[in-house]
Image (cartoon, rainbow, N blue to C red):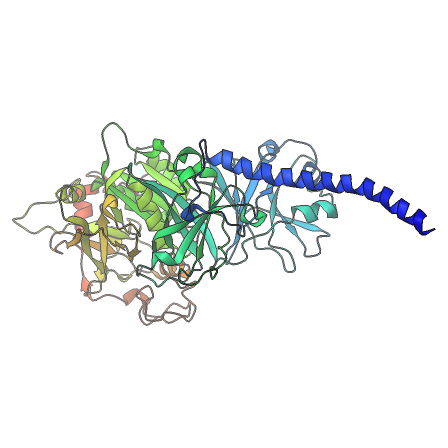
Length: 594
């Protein structure tokens, strides 16, 4: 009996061993082929492997295709075809909504697109219309904004095109399990942007990340950080390149490119990037890389000015729901000589795009850049400086409620069209000056209770006596490699300095404290501060708060009379004298440009 059992076991072993060997061979081939695909993608020649280009597995944020056909309500129609081959490259849970980064551009109409929410047991789904859709990364991709998930539902939200058959969803547990992908669970820890920075001599990548807790407004020790590059998402645990950081400050990290990516820059846009903290004194003490939704962005050449060289003067701002102020701000400053505009839109839901489209029809040369990342104005300005340095000799950073003003005194040069551009051009060839700073005066409601019909420059005429802060215009090519900036000021390259322009020559009127309704809307969600909401009990002494207002959203009885120490009608008279129609008295932003 024993011999018979041994004989059977040997026969089974002969059957199973080839099967096991075959299975192991298939798995080995799969791993090898995945590795080779990665190498072939980023390198057309032999791949040098060095200490700063070593391989290392890290964690990722998943990539996810849209729902299969049986979860889309059936057949086509209603523009659903554009959704069938899209990929959700990343999901980030923000404080008041969820951002999905989609691999391709979604063209209007997109009102037949739903966000799909899964309950935590994966037995059912809920559909909600998307909040909005925006072009992203030079319109090559899209941002889809979804409502926050319902209670007890997963944040792993997907998308569904709405076909002719309506909103019927087939519930198939096995597919829901497969499709329930990960999400960046905390906005406080994520790599959210990456830009290739090339100056013709060197190329590296600038990475934007939250969660490494660098000290504000100071340069950090770059040796403590490392960048990670991968063709796949990080939780696949496939091999990635690691390179050292060469500059770090606040939320911006500059890293070397791996040699094989450096030799194939045209393919860098498909590489995902993350950042980690390292301890160069202790072997093996490195932290895990941050979750990442950032793929390398390459600034397209069609955005660069050609033939006639760079623009002399450009402007960059970040805004949220400021469409009602945008026309006056752009038309006025274009008259002063600004030639190119970079508008970073921080999740507006008003008519910003419509206003920009109207202005562009009249050659105002404005680019709107969707910037979904809340409370990141300084990082956004660093990003803008990278984009603008290819096009602009000078770049101004100021808000849509801030207006440059050239005081005129009898017997002196009378300012007129292009005055601001003429000012900066005097220093364009300076071997030392890389930034011009101007004094800023803050204006109050000036006795008004409703927004002035002719615009802020004419309506608000009473201000605080003491100036607040400065605003700056910089030469973007001469900024420090860290791109460190604070309150509109940048750190400059060694050997360069800033110049304080005399207040008698030029200053900025900041219409900061407007009529109550405008003020409340603006300060309810400040893009520039680290305070999530002005009603929260944080940073009470900050200049981004209204002095004496506290945290209550209640209009003080004397609001219309506050912040009024000096009546100053200089800019009002300047605007009416130079820009008002001689017949009707209308200012250009009061009339339709159509």
